[in-house]
Length: 338
Image 1: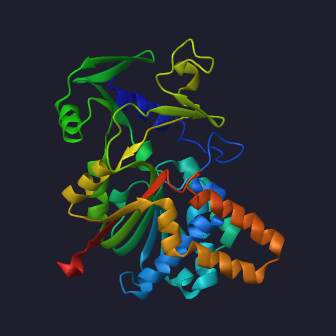
Image 2: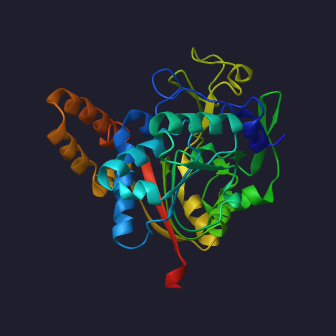
């Protein structure tokens, strides 16, 4: 089978890694910005309010998270909206795009525990089911979870019994590899269809996504497996002390790669959506007001709680942690300006 099919089964098959709820954070396989601090979602809430104030978002707009896992991110956004601009909590429509029924159930339960019936939550299995006039889309670590093909010096990989061989010709993969000056590495599958679905789903929107990667493609393979907070290169030699057979990791651990944001940018351009910017998570969160939110907290809680939250925020923004490694890419579609 193609490597993209293999990775798709690993992550999204009937027993795939993302098909059922997995812990994220200390008890899981990895950390995310969402699992690190509520102020990640809080800063996005502050940004959403700024979009309302500038007139880009209507008070009855749709706020949609894609790939929400437990639902913490969107719930954190709601919590801070309640604090900063409570009337928006009742006027916005809150939506999660989630294909798996088990995760939808987890998200509904978490929202019910957090907000009762104050914040109605709507689910769709794909963006193609959503139709709205004005929206804010948000995603965290979604583009690294798209299946990819593996490419090496003109050949595309196939997989037989977990063994990878570069033995196939694929014109589309070859075209993308040439376009992004790669003689080896990952070529993501599905960015173009995803961008077009989003463009078709809404007349006017802003989309922000956070992920690790760069605007230039890496010159080598970045494919890796996260298991119990260990990072294993996919092509780790069998004589390495950390080697684990792939059949033992398959569907039980996360598999991912660095995002080529140029590929994402071009996919949205093909869908007629305007690229706005790509910058580090550190700059994004500071520009959006995370430090101002911390100052607000400082005035309302004792010093111990403030320092605890400050340390969590440092993990989000400091270059040695998530601040430089993660990037934010932003797009807008605005029919009224055409």
